[in-house]
Amino acid sequence: MTPDAGLIRLLENSLGISIVSCTIVFSGKTHSLLSGKEQEAHLLEVAGESFSCTIGYRGSADEEKARLILADAVSLYCAAMKGGFPAECAKRADLLGSIVSGGSIDNILNELVLLIVATPAFDSAGVFLLNEILLELRGLVYAGEAENKAGKGISFRSRKIRFTKKSPLSDIMYFGRSGTVDLDKVEDWKGMQDCLKGEAYACPLINMDGSAAGMVIATGGGYSDEAAAILQFYSNLCSIALSNANMRGELIRLKTYEEDFEKVDYVSKDLVKMGMLAATVAHELKNPLVAIGGFAKRLAAFGSDPRMDNYIAMIQSEVTRLENLVTEILDYSKSIDLKIERLRLDTVVNETLRLLSESISIGMIHVSKSVDPEISVHADKNRFIQVLINVIINAIQIMPSGGDLKISAEESSETIILYIKDTGGGVPECEMEKIFEPFHSSKQDGTGLGLSLSKKIMTAHGGQITVTNDETGAVFALILPKPGGFND
Image (tube, rainbow, N blue to C red; front, side):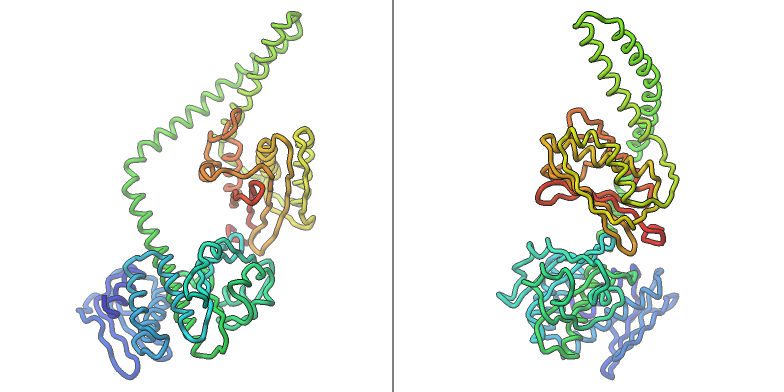
């Protein structure tokens, strides 16, 4: 694929339009990449420091976003055609072709960081992606001077930097201010210093909607305007590659949904009917169960035969278990109505621990808590306590021989996250995707509704509940948005 055809195809894929003409003026010359009839076509013009471009297209596009994408893409094209920087234009053309043709994003980004460190200005480079909810930068791909290849890809991916306060990196990423930064002075960067350290040059990665996506950081020495332009060039290319990959992923998912819709439509209707039936059956069972439990208690008062006492105790135990199951089914089938109020998070946690003090004591659980008394959340108190009880009870049950339960909280500009960590060995990988599904339980006597109901409650709050594993056990994160945060 020629660079001209590659640019046209990239623009069409990125903007979702059909281009009928494209003219670029740079270095004092006019280049007609595509000539076609512009009748009934829309015209879009952009101008950069050393170029101008006009395209004629059919279809609909957000002109503001389209101008940004067109300007970046044409800037890359002009830089590649000039051949002044960076070197190896053929490799850049191949890379552009891979982006357009939907090549593996991992391969594309690995090739991209290799091209960065192949320039005289840099000896190490890494691409980081932003997790907006947790305010973390996570390593994606890395290349270093040694062996000039991404040999630390696996370990680099497991690393993360959390933004606990404003820093030079957050300014670069959120305000689009490319520039130099001393990584040795960045808080929490210690875990990255074997890959990237000292003075570095950083460029932000931008999503198609203009939001922050991450950044590219490179180290070496002897920084100059040319070195800055090189890294900016590849950062723009990285942004386009990520946006193109995300867009392709969305298109594939939409196509899959369309193909599967008719297949699952009748199943979903049956599931709705089954849910209504389950709620109806549960409601009809509740009153007879209460009556059976009451009569069993009366029989126990008259019983004198030890065998009869044992049978009555079994009846009472099973009735209690079924009553709990019926209550959970009815609770799960109802819509979540919330009474939102401002709550001191520390107070809510203390109240929950008091309610569970007997279970904690019997389970030989050592509880440690680190929650700032000044942190407040906006939530339904009873519902949020219900979530805490479900998660803590789950942790107690997963530690039958006792263990440690650590509760901590952290606050960002948009969210408040409460972490509940146990030492029960963690959640098996095969259970991770199913743990919040209704009626899924790994415990013999579990109903499988506690965590699914917790997820339903957190979703109703505009928040999330997630689970990960660390060295000793599972870590549940209850994420609530602040007023004016990402869900407000």
